[in-house]
Length: 466
Image 1: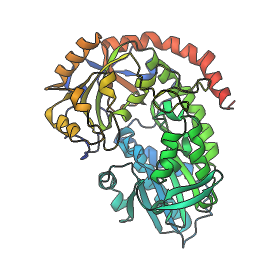
Image 2 (image 1 turned 135 degrees about the vertical axis):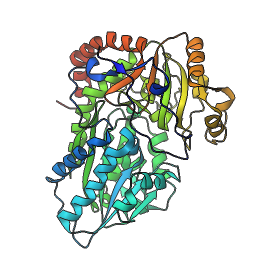
Image 3 (image 1 turned 180 degrees about the vertical axis):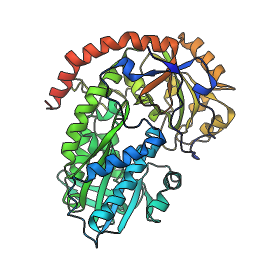
């Protein structure tokens, strides 16, 4: 094993939704190490960047290379074009690779088409300050000459006829004559989307009004829900305005390139195959963890903090194989109609220590302290959680600790474990302690054989992929 002292994760965007940035776990604890993913799975290809700002030139070059083959004939000099970007792209590797792709798209469109009216639309969840924070932090106001607007699910909508009935999109997203779907392939909630048409998800979860978004998120199951964004994408309203897609491609190693074309279905097939091969191995490795304490150490919501390219939510649900479509239900409340609501969590997770993370702002964690003990470092964070209306009972059960070390000690004692894994935004490696590293190294060969020989062929066949 070539583990090193803990590597620093990509820099985070300061935000009103989280505490003031504090030293990372790897800076505070000398016992933490970084395990390269290539030690676990040697067949993983190198990335062009795992979040190092010095690698943005590569992202820019890859974006230009991919866009060179895209048909932009739908865009004329007199058109107005909206580039649609979605919030979670700015949580990948510090957000800079995604931001660089978005800026480069604008440059190339102006050069290729002569169209000067190219605006940015930042699709945000419910955090009404987040779009302004993103625009300022990533320099979008300057790059787009002030033509930047945030949009959210409660903004004015527009009714759209689809093959399955009327739905509602956000009007501002489509107030230009054309739009460009600027996306990212981060599988994130793989236990919900299950890699079924993931590339279309933002047409519902980013570009749609709350009424339509809720149908996808709550009324449909976590397999059938994919019909909603596809119905929106295939509608006449969208197709009359759609120019092309440009998608930031990743593996657990980091960014591997840009996939741009007018055929989003083709992009989705390529992404699905790549994700099953790479994220599938990591997901099954997480399933081999029998006991551990997880540490949140990032500048996003806890569910969505990455470790080794997978979000914390994957650890919560890894006891079930999310990619096996023979299982109709794998996680949470998106399940068979009429069945009891299931908030069960992976029993291997013995505790959560919050070194730093955003509070809810619409994302409910309220069941978490009931299933996994939660330790929040510092009164500053505790105050934010107490004031979060989305999680009114969380602080009744969470424990406030004075230091990271105290939180870890209490969590490990109560959970009867000595294994620590950190979700700090890292790609290409996992930040953990030695006992966790030893476990991962011991289990990886078994996972490699299981995925290569049995699971991957099954997953691919279930999705009609060769």
